[in-house]
Amino acid sequence: MIEPVTLPELKITVYSDYICPFCYVGHHRLQRLNDSYDLKINWCFLEIHPETSSEGEPIDSLDYPSEQWQKMLENLERIATEENIPLSTLNFITNSKDALLLSEAAKQCGRKIFYDLHEKLFSAYFVDEKNIGDRNILKEIAKSCGVDETIIDSSWADKKYQQRLIENFNSARRHGVQSVPSFVFGERILTGVVTESTFRDAAKKITNN
Image 1 (cartoon, rainbow, N blue to C red):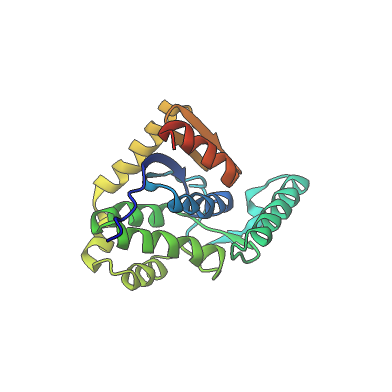
Image 2 (image 1 turned 90 degrees about the vertical axis):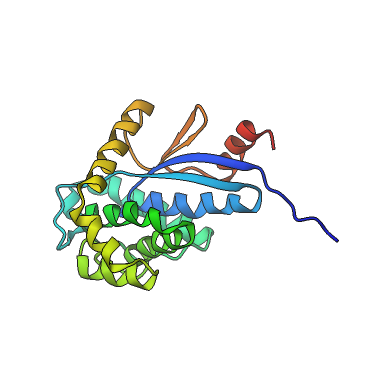
């Protein structure tokens, strides 16, 4: 009888937002480490554009310098093509707070349901071009993942989930994190567009694997 292989546990803290394109790419790259590690990720959600309306606004409302924005999009599209990560053209921005609260609440539903929701929120925005600032769309996604309606409603009504976002913000400050995505591997913090090889190097150093 062949004994099952036990993968070394890898604990990581990730600061992320569902409307951040490089958080989306980073999520895909990080999940590839599942082939070598038992990933235990503490997802700390940070709202990066609280000023944006939940109805959605044109992407140029972010007021980035046009040259900077164009270079960022070109880099994003190149990465998505090279690594076969599904990605639609970004043409609107929305408020992510309700999506973040929903994910915080869904953590109590267990790993499978949480990750199903986590994946679908990213895909809804970056692939299907859905407005994840709309509570009706969020409810539809959450129900498809098996999140109970009482939990969905409580995510926006119960102040403890608002408090968790505040705690995430305070945690980021303690780590010196000022932007997303940021990935904490022990004492090492990786920020921005992080390659898979860099993730693996950081993992190896804290697990000796």
